[in-house]
Image 1 (spheres, helix red, strand yellow):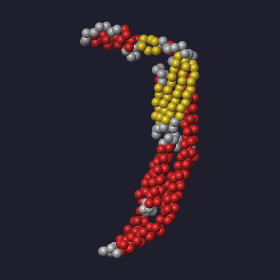
Image 2 (spheres, one colour; image 1 turned 30 degrees about the horizontal axis):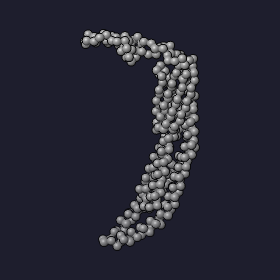
Image 3 (cartoon, one colour; image 1 turned 45 degrees about the vertical axis):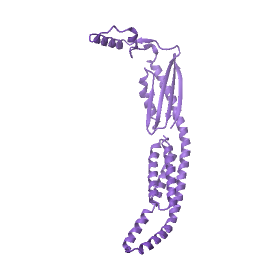
Image 4 (cartoon, one colour; image 1 turned 135 degrees about the horizontal axis):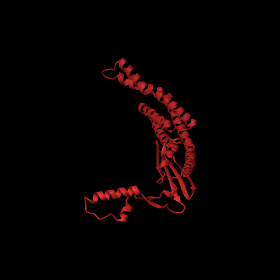
Length: 288
């Protein structure tokens, strides 16, 4: 399910902005982009998102800006000492001039934001977590609104499945008479065959044809799946995965109905069923 949320605020001379974006996904995948020094908040973010959300690709971005400009730069002494020690070690192996200052400063980790950037303040953590909670509530609300709209679409598709099932059931009611006439014609041809077919063999073939062409069991199971799908939608909550599984069962019964059909009209209804079921499944995969 899709959604967007934004929360912002200030703390001392810092301005912060949370942005949360969600797009469709079969499982929950959370991606965080937090400023250096605030990585400690990532477990809180992931745990917070994992409680209300079960599906979707969620991107979390936190931007921090200092009102008075950039935080002061500082030298990471430990990193600088490691670089100098390595240079001293290599100087005995290769001929090289002493490292230039700009080269040392360009080594990743040697220069970093000073400890006075204010990001280590526990009070800031509390404000940021509170802001994240507000943004998450907005995101959940946006997804709920989309879910309510999807339910209307899904109920419409379930109604179409029911209509096609009813039409297929009506055809099945007329089918025995049509099958009887067709079998009578085929039986007359078989009795005239040389050599003639035995009555026992004819009875076996007729029984197999009757069983193979009976799709009432598939229609009954489709009706059961339809009732269960409606119950899940009415119950609400995170039902996307269960509905996804039901769509697989819908499709299985529609496939069997088509394979057992001996009537053009019933085959067409089966194909129409498969089309609506595919559309239903596409929408269900967007559901929480």
